[in-house]
Length: 244
Image (cartoon, rainbow, N blue to C red):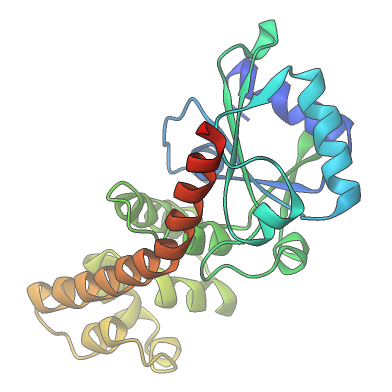
């Protein structure tokens, strides 16, 4: 892995403490060829009492402290909130670590763990399909990243199997690639009711296909806003109580 030494140090520390965590976010995008630069490191984590004991031990080694709110607890993680830490140890000074357990539209941790990609050094990464799902947020930067991740995957596998094709037809956001896939693999394309795939099968014009992809994106953005609205209120209450 071509990752900064501070990131490697965190990964090694987590592996040493046998944490059940999955690398996600920008660092996972680097692993999959999305090439997103990030100074932070994000993890999906199993929300269990034993795993939080291991997490606290690892954070102690990294001299990591919670940034403001929310505090670290099983309840906070199960509510879908992220907990943010800042590392103070010399090798990782200033590095931020974010952990989450429950994300909108993303499978439960046990299922994510069963699909994980295992790298050298005991590092476990969110499967690409799950990483893409986790990226379907209201943030502007996430949608170009989803597109780049799928484009990199398309290039990586010139001879896809049925599972790979199914993934591309479900998630690809590049009109030219969708047109090419529908033309080369019509039987696989026909299995999908996704409007963008159906438009590619019908050889619709690129502008129409682009509009369908935009509609998909806006639906996901709005769903993410709705999901986060009560959680933002929860965070506001936590900040208010913290400042009293």
